[in-house]
Image 1 (cartoon, helix red, strand yellow):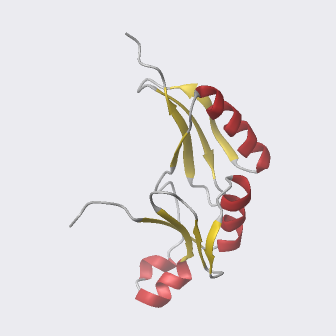
Image 2: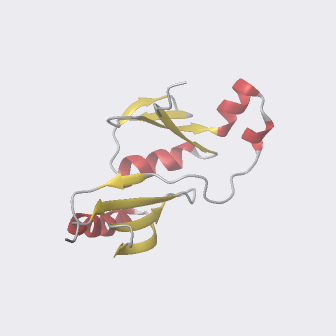
Length: 133
């Protein structure tokens, strides 16, 4: 196996709500819209939203019928500078992202901010801080 990720799919029970968020709040352009499966333009990796019911219909695996609970994954969005992280965080919160953590310098050498999508998935904006000599 080649350990490379080619597609990230967010499973949801409300595709239209997440489609609106990722398109209007985060600015992703839609590549393909099949109503219960939405794929967005995303350089480097395919990115999609899919209804749990679609995957259950295909596989019949009972886990697709279980309600989602808790944080299962995080998307991290790289930005150019702390100022851009700060500005982007303010903009997406004003457009509807749920604030989780305001921008701050982290001990691992990044400036980060956290926000949540309508399903409660927490994601990160970040940039690397200049290395001190």
